[in-house]
Amino acid sequence: MRTLGIDIGGSSVKAALLDGDTVVWTAAGPSYNRPATDELVTAVRQTVRWPLPPLDGVGLCVPGLLDRAAQTVTLAVNVPGLIGIPLPQIVSRSLGIDLPRRLWVTNDAAAAGYDIWATTKPAGRLMVLALGTGVGASVIDDGKFLLVDGDSPGHVGQLDVGLPGEAVIGPDGGLGGLEGYIGAPAIAARYATDLRNTVETWNGDELEIRALARAIRICHAIYRPQHICLAGGLGIRLGHLLAPIRRLVGDCLTSVARPGWTLSTGSDDFHAARGVARLVVNAPIAAA
Image (cartoon, rainbow, N blue to C red; front, top):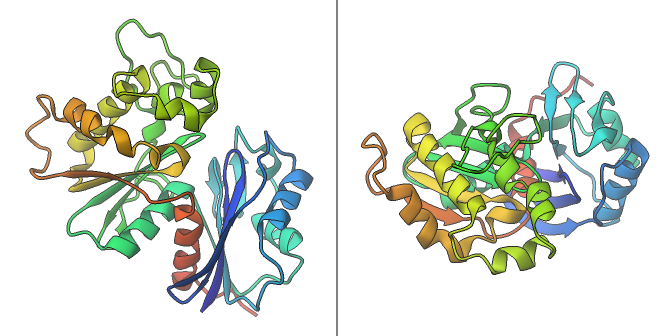
């Protein structure tokens, strides 16, 4: 099967074309800020490599709250152009083609998690934290997702990880919310440099890292993962901080955590685009 994965993120679009398990190409589009629908359609069109071959399926990652039955997004703070527009319409407008009979929609954390699971096949439960504009999570057991609300194991980005002396409010309005510490907009508001340059200077003692470690400690108690992988535009850039993060997490960690747990990062920015392209293979076939 030849499948196209489109990852509509909070600040840009990424895409991947797969032929079976072979990645034909990946591509990243221009940055945007709270795009309207027409701007979003243009961003997808500018990201995809042309000409497109005939497709057997299209996968789409979208942020926010998804109404799967209506195939629409009901809330997307950072991408308002998605709200209320039928997602198949956005795909067909962007690509200028009739939709293939297979279409699958999910969130970036689930898609990134599936790509990491499919390419590493770890023994035991895998938890992927997608750190970017927002914070999402997926929990996977032997290729099967643990689902609590929609396509997620719960709203990890809204965990209250409040640190003493830090009155941080998350973008959802929640006091101490993880996204208020380590979401990309929150980081941009605290630092004068861009995200990559900011993260390169961190040593592991920053409030963002302490909040992340606290969230991982909570996740050990709730999900008991054997493997934790940090993905997303921020997560993949934390490789130099894995040792201090692990020390913060492991300090008097609950005994229900699985012994020998691992901590790693993803490899690049295209896990979600590749992952949703892989997930399309199992998507139901629409009626002709």
